[in-house]
Image 1 (tube, helix red, strand yellow):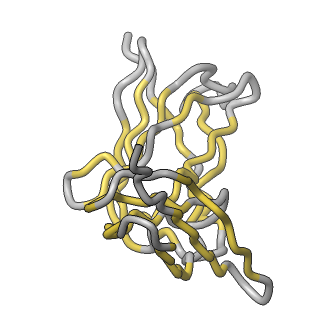
Image 2 (cartoon, rainbow, N blue to C red):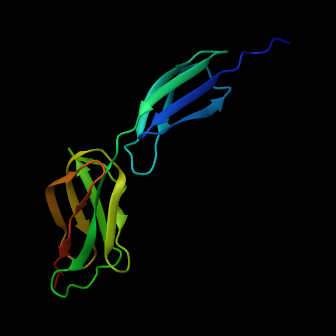
Image 3 (cartoon, rainbow, N blue to C red):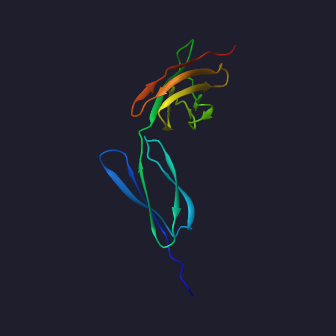
Length: 154
């Protein structure tokens, strides 16, 4: 019986002064594959790789710090937290953030690998008028505070 050569994929990710090397998978199918490298607080990287049978394929990546948009969402009249409101971030018409729901004290945090740049942020909650903001900047390693106040629908 003839044995098929095995393949190995290794990746190294640099996020600062210290870096790391990872063995991702063994016995991958030869040919085109994709590798996704992510770390909390950094922009996710997806890279195409060509795996060669019987060889080790290396992927080197530099992960860029992500931006963070966070603060509180409150009722515009009472100042009380709006619990369970949804907050989303869009960039160039694409929903970039998975979105988040506000905590019982009204806090929210949009940090799902936000690449640096300008975003449209929208807040939604039943019983309130939607609120949107344009040009909200996500800057690597910095928290952009965006206090959101929703107006109740009467």
